[in-house]
Image 1 (cartoon, rainbow, N blue to C red):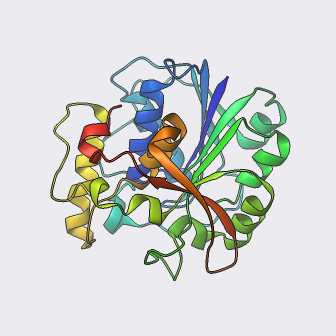
Image 2: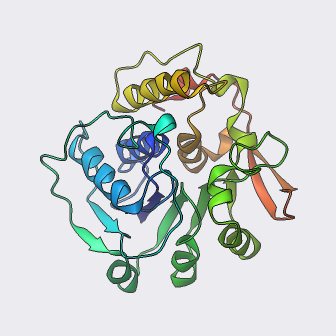
Length: 267
């Protein structure tokens, strides 16, 4: 069983990747594909950030391949005020030591035949192609909102960047949506209670928290890592069907575990 992550490497994608790869082997995966897409940053910056992150993993993980989407047209916004000068919190200076294989998206997808679990943490622009090629065992995405205040142009950011693709995906494919409603839970706000752990994930989360004081955000929520938690710990969540402002019907995960983020961060 493989794990596939579509990440638009802002700092919350880095947190999610660190969490997913640290636990990948014990979760039963024998390999992972990291697809670097545009969203929080242009696709070429996303690819560079993925290389830096993988090069600096302080733990052994399953074999990883990196998928390059730079040749494909994609929406993005370079949100430096939120994600730092390089889009990933300026945590890593280079990709020295990176040695994972890098495959163009078209070549990778054409040869993909493995059963897999799918985490989508950016816009849905390329997600539909993956789903049409082969359906996953489980599909969890971070995106959308039902009742919470939108965070970008009247929508959740990932939804806003490609509303048509978002609608196409959720209409056809079974999914779990980790929305703004999922993540803006008081127990998941680390702005006043930063995690004390010494893991890579904790260091990324602390940097994400620091950036909220620069951007002026009210609260610090590690959006994409909650999608990892929903995939890894489905029993921590309740689920409901709800329609968003565009009429998309989502299966929304609601955090019900009752523990603050600092207690679940590395679990």
